[in-house]
Structure formats: C-alpha cells, structure tokens
Length: 112
Length: 110
Image 1 (cartoon, rainbow over the protein chains, first blue to last red):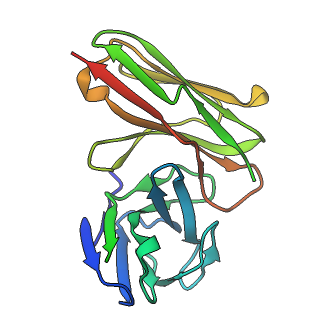
Image 2: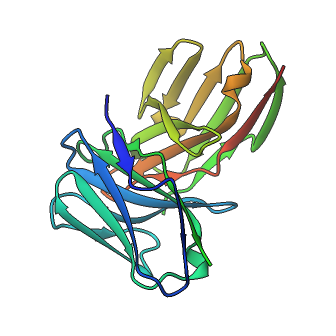
C-alpha cells in the first residue's frame, strides 16, 4: 500500500513565523503535490514537483515556497505565516502524470 | 481552467438506501478520481476512473468521458458512508495537478 505521511496533524503558529510542513511518501513516486482546503473554496493546488529539485506553481502559490531535495520528501514552506494561511494542508503523490494520486492525512494549521 | 460540478451538494438518506452522486466536467480529462473524506480530513481513494466502469463492494463508478460526466453509486448505505465525496479531474494534456469539485456532503441516518 502507498503511504503518504505528514509531519504534524495539528500545528499552531504565530503571525510572522517561518513554518515548515513536511511530506514523505514511501512508493518512489515521481510527482508530489501540496493542496490547501478551505470551507467554501474546496481543495486548491499550491505547488507540485515532478522530480527532485524541480517545482511548479499551482493555482495559489503566493506566500508559499517548496523544497524537494530527495525524491521521497516534499516540503511546503510559509516564509512569514499570516492568519489567512490558516487552513488544512494536504500532500499527495503519484507515480506519473495523470496517475492516481494518494493523499496524506493532512495538517490543520492555525496561524494566530 | 477546467470546471468541475458535483451534485447534489447535500444528501440525507436512511441506512440501507441507495444513492447516485454526479460529477460533470467541462473539458477532456486524463485523470478522474473519486474520494471520500473522512471526519478526520483524510482523503480516501475510492476510484481512479478516467473512463469506463469499476466496482468495489457496495460502491461502483462510471465515467462517460465523451459526455464529460462521472457517476458514483453507493448501494445499501451504512452510517460509515457518511462524509464528503469529492470528484477530481486532471485536464487532458495538462500536467498541473487535480481540480476538485466542491463535494457532496452525505449523511446516512440510522
């Protein structure tokens, strides 16, 4: 079974802090994705990566950056957290483009 | 971008009932997936179904790609089926992740 894990289930941070959300997959997948989910707005793509050290912007990249130094790990970085980044963050991975995506359990981030 | 519409937005049924959830999309797609989001927020993969029909126990799904819709069938509903069901698609020729519908919130009452 594919396993995607995220470093925290719940996280509380203060405005202005630098925040790291970590995602690890164990199936040697090429592609990894970060989404956020908000009531009324649904799930939206922030960034994705199709290879180590490669990244592409999704629909809402502003205020975020990503890092993929190893194939199995994809990090989402909030350089200076703001209250409007309070959200549920979901990581996913897939073997190839248009293949089935598998999601991690999510991280509920609250920025105070 | 591609539009994904799910219907109905909310559905309340008694245990044992059958239901059909619909997903319409506005363009040709390479990938279509159905997910169930559990109360803890985890997205559970139900079907990867860009075309054709699949069945898994009490659940089945059909995608008619030429007519740009997909249906998820749930038979003999159980209370554990409650939650939000999402349809998500990836545009044909695109390489930019999934676009999600707003979901169908299903409540199964005992």
